[in-house]
Length: 268
Ligand code: ATR
Image 1: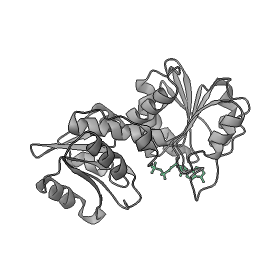
Image 2 (image 1 turned 45 degrees about the vertical axis):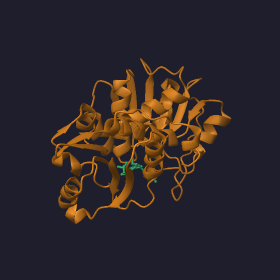
Image 3 (image 1 turned 45 degrees about the horizontal axis):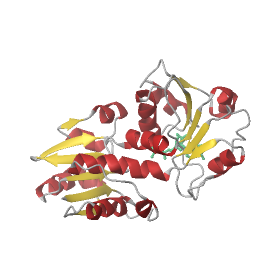
Image 4 (image 1 turned 180 degrees about the vertical axis):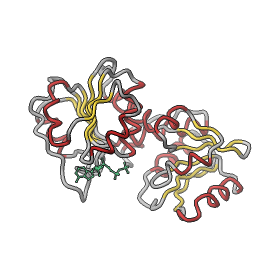
């Protein structure tokens, strides 16, 4: 099995650790490498990988959207999200998938099995690529309402088109006003990540028993999550989303759903 992750830059990717762990654990002969692709030569590089006998690859920044046009077919998630993060190559054809929404939802489900998305109200902070996948995952999981807010409101308005009846765009400087309706609060912005300012809503007024989660995992315990913990809300860290999106990708390529065990998580 010849696998890879492509991006630009790519050297900080943790995906090789995850997939090489699973290849070994499942006795599958093969390799998963990180490949830096020159954006000016994107199409040729992809064709080159096909000719080199790759079975599949993950795609990260900045190629998740560009790859769609090169795919022979894409799944519903990738189509609705407008981004592909996993490609399976079969008979010289490229099949595109998006496993980010699965990764987000499964991370919450595995950490908080009692949390049921059905009929819940979610609040999504941020409107970049990750928010797009998370909105899709939330809608598929049956939430009844999503408050979406972003510093640049026009970007939130674009994402709203995924489901006008469910997504309500609210102002970035007033999102805390909707905390009293919020069952799950999700940070998809870069705020809280090393090198970025912190996200510091007081969380006062958030519904009792609400769940707070962050897609930032460096640091693992962001100021938002620390705050949630102190205020005794449920919270889920972001690293699991990475592991679960990888789990689905590995299954697409190999037919085996790999386990996410402590031996793996300790390496991430
Ligand atoms: P992606 O790669 O996921 O598309 P991005 O474009 O880098 O991500 O943006 C990530 C998110 O973090 C965006 O919602 C961005 O808000 P803007 O759309 O207004 O840029 C948000 N973000 C980054 N820095 C921020 C800051 N200092 N304050 C508020 N939001 C910020």
